[in-house]
Length: 349
Ligand SMILES: Cc1ncc(COP(=O)(O)O)c(C=O)c1O
Image (cartoon, rainbow, N blue to C red; front, side, top):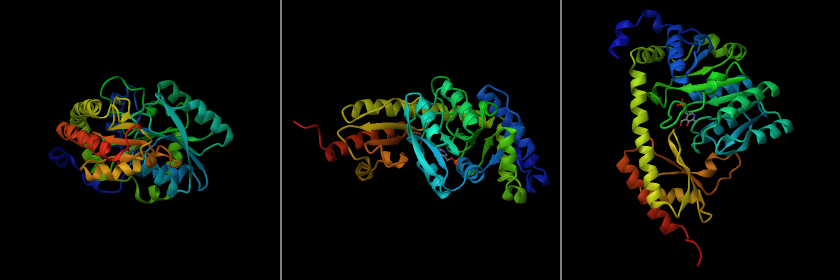
């Protein structure tokens, strides 16, 4: 990062502004505006240590122990841990091909209003499903009508490999009580521990009124200068393009391998972005048991119940394609299929 060191100033190593360094937020705002097709103001952005910390912070500011959080069923298992840390009751809302079923959410809202609705709108972890534009807008409207906060985890929003993705929830922060959480983890490097929350002025005011923000200023101030350099020099956009291309090829390689080896073992829909395939195994397979079978075969998977708010989804598994070469993906899928065939009872006579 030669360029960064040449332009660094002593103040870059002092406490940062509460929302995050102004020059960083201006660069980030331009980057997000280009990525999401709608101008973003630096005033709407709050710097975080990435989406995990952002979610913890959102729970801290907008929930109390005993509150309810509605989540997609399935959803990210480590988000569940954050919710449990805050004493929240997790309630799953079923999904279909357009993501969270908002009519079911509406019924649940009338029965029991939540503090938060947590969604992974694009390329959900683990299902790969994407919330439609209409449902995003309805969710934003409902947040105002019912007074809850939408915590939109947009970590995969820019990892779209084929078609246009519906607009980020970040473009809807003025439409409702929407917090859009984004991160450099999936588009640059997770070790940076850098991300952002996009929010309207009312929600921003609440976040800025936090003790640790008042005491220490923004998190990860120095790293934000390095990432600003990556954005301003075009490195971030180049890297994102390269990552999208590589992940698209890996997604296709896994889809082909699954068609070849898994036709009689599972059902799935090809995702259009993100990191994961979500497989519904046939024959009442217990996914938790398949995990050790997979490990013995030198492959990996995550069992469905991890991603359920209530221990359901017992015959689903998540496979990740993002971090493996196409050759390893082909080999891994073939090994998994062999191992499953040996361990899982076939269809009866
Ligand atoms: C849905 C989701 N949210 C958050 C994270 C973690 O994000 P970060 O590294 O920004 O904390 C992940 C990583 O797997 C994820 O899949």
